[in-house]
Image: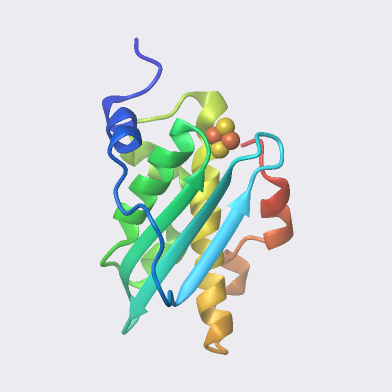
Length: 144
Ligand code: FES
């Protein structure tokens, strides 16, 4: 059996939503200290909807595929859906990742939550902060 699903290969070879958004409403950056990979997510938010989501990922194929899929999953959705996005949902949408690559999908979840955290901070709003990752722990990464 192939190590990576066709969907992972597709999103790695043809990543959707790559690049930055000028004047983004929220920007979230995370890194995994062990592998050194870094992911940055940009959000445009209009009337509580994720109008656009893009990413810049300096990392492995699974991290690129995860950020591509994660941004696809939240585009056009309400903020609450984006906040609820889990790395497991990203893995399922990609038709799976090898166990030792699941941590790459965690970066996508954390980068989106940090971008939303940035959005709320910029707008002086508090919103279910317990759903948001502790940015310190993101920098140190996860072995999940
Ligand atoms: Fe680090 Fe994939 S190996 S994010």
